[in-house]
Structure formats: structure tokens, C-alpha cells
Length: 143
Length: 135
Image (tube, rainbow over all chains, first blue to last red):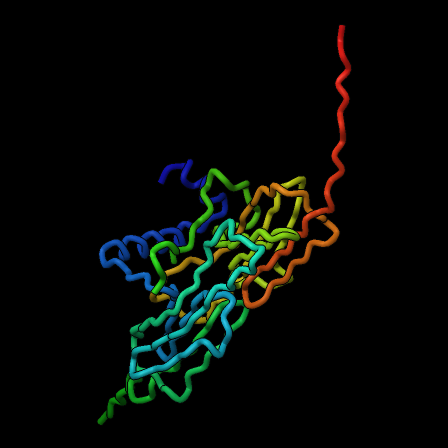
């Protein structure tokens, strides 16, 4: 990496974090993500997954979340305001669509324990791993 | 399912356009709608992750500047396994053409949407400049 590149990224950048980001970008090139709206980030540990998505200005009642085994479905819509007669749009960049997206999670989910919150326009869904799907520890009997 | 005219990808602010920052983080350009009405201009911008306490709006001369700070609550002890969007602050600058009544500007942030109402000033007095005839 060139110094100028480092300068651009900032002085106190953590090279490992940048490296991880680049390797993520690279792996994305190999298998292009669909980038279906809305874009999501998925976080996971051994016993739960957290899905976040940025979808500002929605009504929580317009968001529909369902889980079947390891597939999470998010449906929703946000429609744009109709301009009044004396108003004209100079710019219109904000999304105004109806969407439906499926996300495959790393494991099966305990449907009854899924929680979702919508805060500051960010939707966070917490999905605990199904008990039956969790790895079992096998005790070794000693003789 | 976004339509073609709307890019669902977040746009990062180009390095050349931004000033040197003291916070090391990514900065994105929020998408915005600008609506011109009889009484003024309304700017609506999507800044998910920002609330009324973490947004800075300044108007200097006719440059309107929006800066939204995002403090993401990244889940503890979890690993990012799929990342379709980046998290960072929002910054955007607009040059306004109209005279704005600065005292009546209203700004609200609700559910990650900034709504800025910029009322038009009462007609700025036109000043006539006399041209003296030279010899």
C-alpha cells in the first residue's frame, strides 16, 4: 500500500481492519452479492445471529419479518410523499419502493425467540440459534 | 426491489471532496429529496443511525452543510459474516440559491430521516445603484 493511500485513509487507521475489509471486498468480487434492497449486515456467533439493515423513515407496521428454519424474510415498503400542487422536486434520490428480501443465515433459528427493534431508522433483528441445531458436546467416558 | 434510477448502494464521499477529519471513519453521502415550494425549500435526507442529538446543520452564506454522526451499536462478541453496507457518518453540502429566512429554519430527525424546512425570506430589498455619468 502506498503512503498516499494511507494518508487518504487517515493517519490512525488500523491496518488489520482495512485488510479484513479489503479481503471482504475481494471475496465479494468472486461471488457477486445480489445487493437486493435493503442492504443488510449479518453478525453471528455460535448461538445467535444479528441482522441489521438501514431503512430510514419506515413505519414499523410496514415491516414484515418472518423466519423459516435458516431463512429470514424481510418485507416492507416506503412510499414517497406526493408533492403538493405548488411544489416541485429538484432532486429525488431517496428510495421509495416495496421490497422483499430473503437472507440465508448460518444456522437454523428458534422462531419463537426472534426479536426485532427499529431505532433511528435502523432495523436490528436478533435471531437465536435453534436449540436442536446447536452443536452437542460429547462427553467421553473414561474407564 | 429498487428501481433502476435509485442506486441502493451507499455512496462514500470522495476523498478529494472531504476535509481532513479528526474522527477516523467512513463518510457517506446521504440520498436526499429537495422540494421547492411557494414558501421555501424542503430538504429531506436519509441518515439512518442518526438522531436529533448527533446531527449538525450549518448554514454559512448560502452553503448548507449537513453532518450526521453515527455511533453504531455493533453487537458484542459477534463476528461480521456478511456485509452489504458500510457504516459511517453522513456528510453533504448544498448551495442554496434563494435567500433563506434563517430565523425560521426548522429541522427534525425522525426514524433516521432529516427534514429541513428552509423558508424563503421576505423579498430582499432591491437596492438601486445609481450610475454616475462620467465625463
